[in-house]
Length: 330
Image (cartoon, helix red, strand yellow):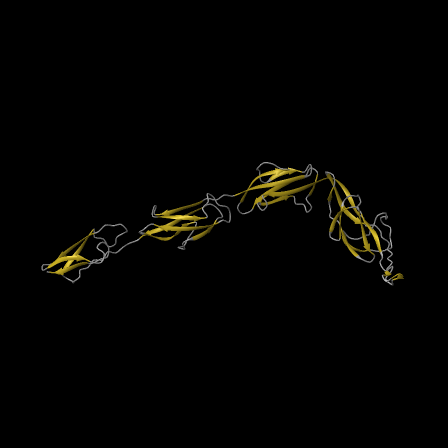
């Protein structure tokens, strides 16, 4: 469509329409489309311009309908060969750095002018892994350009769960902050490692229960959620958590934001041993050892003694814990 046309020259597009049933009959719609070829360039050439929100490497030509509106803008500064940058100064049509134009039959070229500056270098920063932290630098620069010989202090800050490890690219080593000298374009990466946290669990008193972890892992990372479940042996009851967990909820979930130690506490169950005789006053039962309460596994000897005229006959209930001795008369 544009082959052989000259940039900056206005062209009027002539459209001839015919009646399909009578090819010699020209339509009234003929010659109603008017357009032109417009050029967008930069000075110096080869820089970028943004036309209708699309970035182009100039020069570029566009076929626009006369009267149509189009947006023009440029980014500034733009990088040239190392040590050189180009700073926007003006548009050939007098518009602002970002402005809208209306295509006219004059079809003038649109040229943004840049000033060439020497002895300027660009600084780019990155972090690895992505999301591990951030890099700031002093002095600050809105466009990340510095003049030759500038000293720049870089500081790496880890996000939660990450620790700075070292610099790579235009800086090296583990010193943080680090100072670099801008003697060329530099790309600097701050490297971070993900923190590994230990989760230690124990029981108190020792040996009376256990704590399981889900998921079960050697180490955990920031934000991991771990469910802890306390299980007891016979004769003990779970009483509560201490350390990095609290309360009596079992199981309990803890969120890892550092190494943690959690203790499951248990209390020893106390049992009452009640003894009685079937007919009040006709005998007695003694306990050995004689204690107010007993614990799981205690062995207690029960001895039934009858008064004259009665003889012990049998035990009923539980002969070891809480069962009465039954006596019968002779």
